[in-house]
Amino acid sequence: MKASIEMSMYPLGREYVPEIKDFIERVKAHDNIVAEVNGMSTQIFGNFREMMDVIAREMEVSFQKNGKSVFVLKIINAHLQQ
Image 1 (cartoon, rainbow, N blue to C red):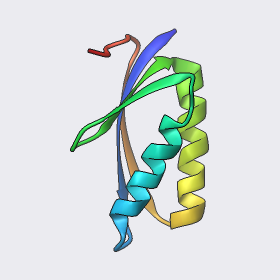
Image 2: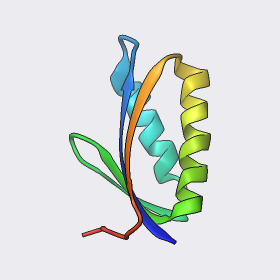
Image 3: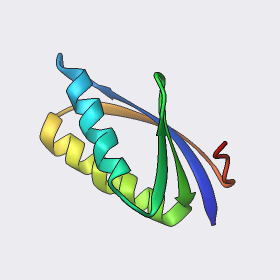
């Protein structure tokens, strides 16, 4: 099933920009999804199950590397890439 996910990461440490950039670069490294970044969030497009696997894996890496962070996701079961 095709899906679109909009997500934002809010690290709770002082050096939050490098942590956000690191997360985005790790997500973008996966060939099976498309990621688009803007100033407010990151949108990813692709197969629902594959995207959820990537997000879960990369969120876990961020939690282990950076400590506490908040992730906010909006998910729709449609491919909304412009």
